[in-house]
Amino acid sequence: GDSVTQMEGPVTLSEEAFLTINCTYTATGYPSLFWYVQYPGEGLQLLLKATKADDKGSNKGFEATYRKETTSFHLEKGSVQVSDSAVYFCALMVNTGFQKLVFGTGTRLLVSP
Amino acid sequence: NAGVTQTPKFRVLKTGQSMTLLCAQDMNHEYMYWYRQDPGMGLRLIHYSVGEGTTAKGEVPDGYNVSRLKKQNFLLGLESAAPSQTSVYFCASSYGLAGGLTDTQYFGPGTRLTVL
Image (cartoon, rainbow over all chains, first blue to last red; front, side):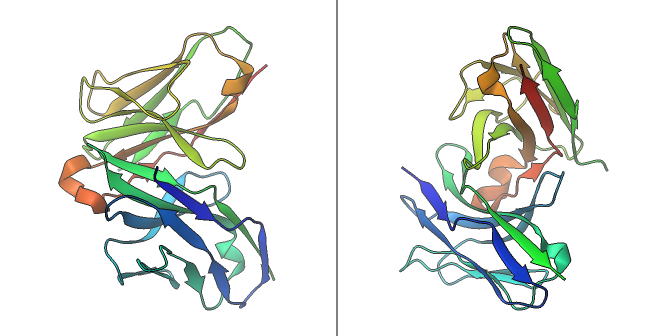
């Protein structure tokens, strides 16, 4: 079945460090790929998305490229801030009669000053 | 424009008690969803609705019922709560088929439920 695998957390970084959070997926067909972010005490918010191979989604300094050959959608940011501390979820969307979102287990990011 | 709201924010139940969680959205979205979030398991879909008056089962529907009598509201009911239903519950909504496969789901702030 369709699934998403994310790297285990927490990921602990110092401010201004480079961030990579790995995400790989298994899906039939051609899914759309998403990164959602959950700040403490809040619901999930869409961070970025990509709809086809080689597309790059970007927002707030975060980027992810849809790599069909490696079935990956790794999240990157060149210089993290303390305010980026949150849980990041990779997800894919498949059309099974309605648009079903399949989430990874989430990766907690902790950024210290 | 409040987006997606959920009530209550917190609740503690005893085993066997019942309760209803309310989700409301003011974006005129067709689709609405209920998820539960458990440590190490990400979000799992409980039930969803593709329009007013419709509901369908998701991945983990057992022990829950839902209703969508009005387009803007989606209710999640627990008839006889069990400790295994201790979780954080999130409601979400989206445009639905009009949004295609890039459709964004908008999430509420969550309800933290503890069943003793």
